[in-house]
Image (tube, rainbow, N blue to C red; front, side, top):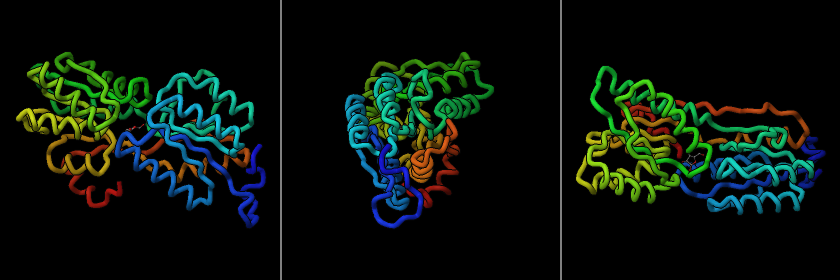
Length: 307
Ligand code: AHR
């Protein structure tokens, strides 16, 4: 193993510092920026030596970052997998090197769960359900057709797969509510805007937009306004994350409902990294607690929003 054998023994000096290699997805959204900040700040205050690597949205970059961490003999590896599949080989290499791996924020689809110690993050299916439940309630008792367009997150990523699944489950008992268009906006504001432009051109009667994150919703708002329509009124908007920009649009009436996804995973991740470095067995799944926000709730919460 690495230098973590005597970690936590209380010795002074830098030698027994835990080294954590972290491979981040990229900087695609406000959520991601807040997540990176949380991880960097928590590592500093936990006295953990963080080797941070930004994959710029590419799985191959994450795989080579993880291989570098293995070569460098870090004590613990954590990463937020850009997509769910294709990790078995590199995870096996980490396991063979005796380096514990912590999945952060996003899951992998590996059948062999011994390839990682734990998975910390949100329940994305639940988030999708909360979004769909709100919509069903909003149109309760009405039988008119409700046309929903969906802006999906990064293709093949856990949050895109699960948020679609949870939402579809929640609305399925209501045949009048249908998803008429669904396309990826890669969790990015600019892509949310351009995809919404094409939705607006091809589909004249959009009632609702379900965007898998705030940023895509915010980009779509620009497209909706440019088309002469009123976001939040002519087209109802549901998003996920609840970052400050999203909460501001919610309080302003341009978004109707936000499902929270907390990016503040840093403190818990550092605790888990210390335990993993000390050879402790970790709980296999650590869930993040989160809520939802209506427009009224956003007005109250906004002044306290840190990210
Ligand atoms: O994996 C979490 C998702 O990734 C966030 O909801 C989204 O904003 C980010 O890009």
